[in-house]
Length: 289
Image (cartoon, rainbow, N blue to C red; front, side):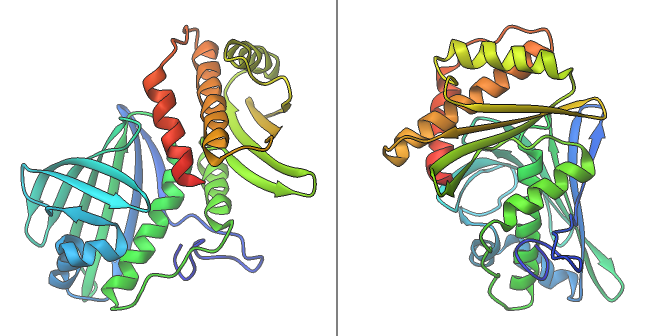
């Protein structure tokens, strides 16, 4: 999201990634560099003043304090962590522990640049899980930061824009989408997942069949697998029977875990049931729904 929540667009209004995803020796890095025409002191205030942080990121408690823990409420979900570095008007680095128990390290640097300031953001993570979705989300957050710095209210996200931007990051940087989505169609509601695996399509089909069968699901699902340059792209579509949002979230969490298990099988490992992660995924999808 730059001029709009979906990001800057070309003539066909397709979202364009403004960040980049890089593979490094110990994991992955998501990077954004945003030039802002304001003094570095002002950008630092937007980055660290709790009242302003609430407008572009979420409600932080108690604030960024070196060596201290924090909690952050954003969009109905919460994260927590610890402030690792806090150099006034220069650098903020924190750990970021999400509701699934996964940790990343986030780093912002404020640099004098071209009469204004360059805000350099880096997110370091061990795995590529949620990178496509996270990249789209952080692009929106960076756009919101720019709006708050300008004294404006961040734009509201347009329906479908985040998913389109997620797909753009997947295509450009070769990372798999992770989250499932719910779609309304003439024949009812369906859940859909897309996952990319670096394995032959036949092997992917067998791994997904084993994983979904072990969870007692998948019999009613439509599964399509195509190969593209050594990558098998899996698409799952399943009709959602009538039920509560909690029922839908539970079904989506089960599929999510099954597709994660398929990846483990394809890497030669043995998936182990993880009830804690399943419950965390259910909570994540309830929030998303």
